[in-house]
Length: 300
Image 1 (cartoon, rainbow, N blue to C red):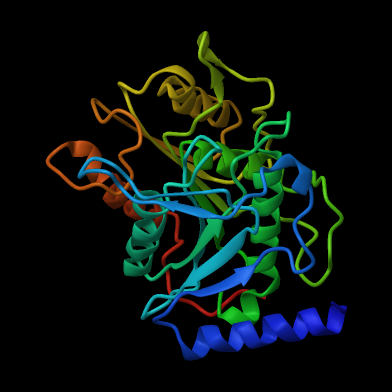
Image 2: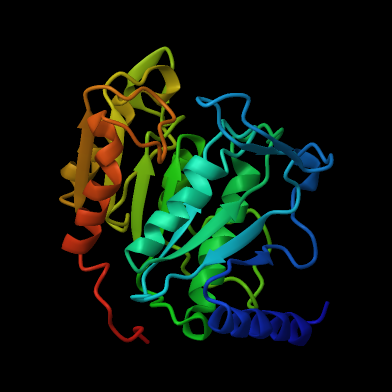
């Protein structure tokens, strides 16, 4: 597909976002096919229905990653790329995906649901999903004007493995392992803010009190709001969020941390009497305090 054809494709997609704000619009991330296809098991995409009230809806065998754009009734210009969790094997697409988009829409935020490639079989954990997330941030920022978004209020939020993906995207936004395309990518794909919810794989199971060497916060790392349950364990231990917060503290970077007494792992958007269910309110308050929810003309 020519560059002109691809630009036309996304111009039409942008128009549909304006005309059909109530319905999510889905776009392919890779117009000419995803890179590193050999790293993913290529089988028909599969939807696994919940087996009970405590189970979750899953997607697996995702080889064609997409963005689904959820527009609020009254957009304020902010946007968030949403990364469901699932151990890089499946995507918990509902309680860590579509329901999150609905909540963000209630804040006036345009939600961008990232259906990234799983399961991952590459020796570098999360390589293909990282490519997808880097491209996603670039696409949102690249098309911000036609989508009515502020290119300087593009955030990323993720759960568990998706939380790890969000963190890695924020820390390594421009170290790309694919050839960039000016029709989709931007020079700087650093998210403007970061919201990891019970992020996984930032610590090792046998040493949860030290961040892995790949987790390197720099002075350019974006503001962060972290959410975790104290009783989370192993590679998803709450110590990971505490340690990441401390790295931000060392550099005097904007950061907020919420640790709940109980909640375990994978609570997502589940409701209930446990205080952990209030995390969306706390994150919404943080976004408001950071000036992310102000309705204003998109920055140039």
